[in-house]
Amino acid sequence: MACKGFSVYHAFKWNSYARRVNFSLIVGVVIVAALAFDFTNGFHDTANAMATSIATGALKPRVAVAISAVLNLVGAFLSIQVAKTISGGIVDDTKVTPVVIFAGLVGAIIWNLLTWILGLPSSSSHALFGGLIGATWIASGADAVHFGQVVQKVLIPAVASPLVAGVVAVAGTFLVYRITESARQDVVSRSFKTAQALSASLVSLAHGTNDAQKTMGVVTLTLIASGSLAAGSGPPLWVILSSGVAIAAGTYFGGWRIINTMGKRITEIETPQGFAAETSAAVTILASSHLGFALSTTHVCSGGIVGSGVGRKLAEVRWGVAGQMVIAWVLTLPAAAVVGAGAAEVAREGAFGTLSIGVFLIAIALGVFLWSRRNPVTPDTVTAAAEPIPATV
Amino acid sequence: MDINWGALGTVALIALVVVAAVTGLFALGVRGLSARVAARDSGTSGSAGLTTAVLCFAVCIAVVGYGIYLTVTA
Image (tube, rainbow over all chains, first blue to last red; front, top):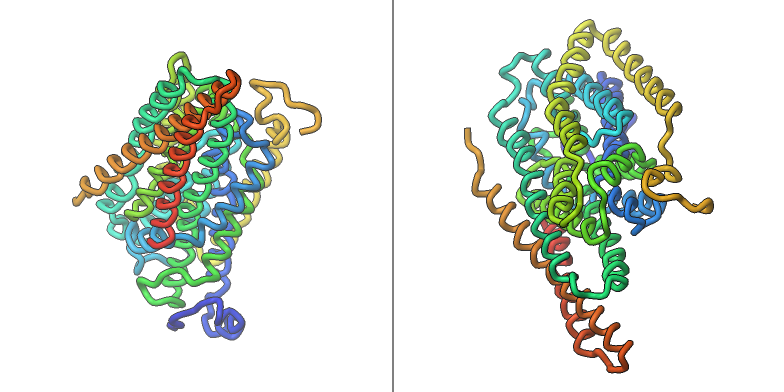
């Protein structure tokens, strides 16, 4: 049953609407799972914007995540470019059911949780694409996956974007150090602290314009699949709002493990490098977002950080850590696809199968949470590897 | 398969030019500030340094503002 133009203005009609569409329960489950994914996306990616600022002391850890959360929310409202691209391209919208989307989300969330516990900055977008691809493949066959689109819209940007951001960051870092070489270093250090706080904010904004779009895309895809929205529709306002809030909440929760990896373990970062890395990342993301590429902010920001390490004389890039990261990137899409495919296979058993997957997901999330308590990384310890933290922080 | 090399190239080029401009200008601004501080310490006004700094920072802010404007109107 079609209910075109469903929006927040019609939300009060939700109950009567839900009764008319008898599979509303599964649609509700998918929306909850999508927002849960969005939340993991937020805490997985806080590091992208804020890791280097926290590492250099340009921003205090809790202040950094608060700024990032607010700007992610704002960013969610600024652009709806990417949401249209995702729901209309990578898999065949007409063959995707809410159950398939649910299975895909389960794959993405599980991979996000596992990489988070290991402190690996893997791409949430690739996890989402992987999960959706795996689940669609099992449910509707390989034809329902548009591999040409996957290469064009996911793989090519995945390889190109960190290289672009990296090369650009090398140039930016080199310029900054070259120009300020003869300047007074106290002025340099103070100025770049401020600049870095600003450039980190810009990355957060760019992140919001990009990543919240993915959840909006998924929820919109679900509403289209269930007949609540016409094919090709954009996201309604309530979808934009809830996606923005979920990603902001996840961001505020803070992914301290990944912040530690990106801020401290890849390379030692000074404020001018952080500024160059973040500016490179923000510009690359904004330029791509403007052209409708769904690139991974994680890849871009990591590329920028590595580039800023290469661009400064005497900075040491720990290529071992960078290598681990790249391995996680390569594994992300296939691994999430396998989990998504497994979930889709179980979901074929009907409502009981779908229920079991939900229970399984909650069990995994709990397990990962308990595991993380054994070796917690908190705002107070996130930068401890390099400098002692005053007791008052 | 249709890979949009043109768009990718555009992203790369725009990113390189904009980042070089913003980081370069900001660094020049910082050098201006530093010149002003040094001039003040030695008793002169250092207004040339300050002017450079203000101009450079203003252009940086304008570029960033334009970027945000493009995003909002996209």
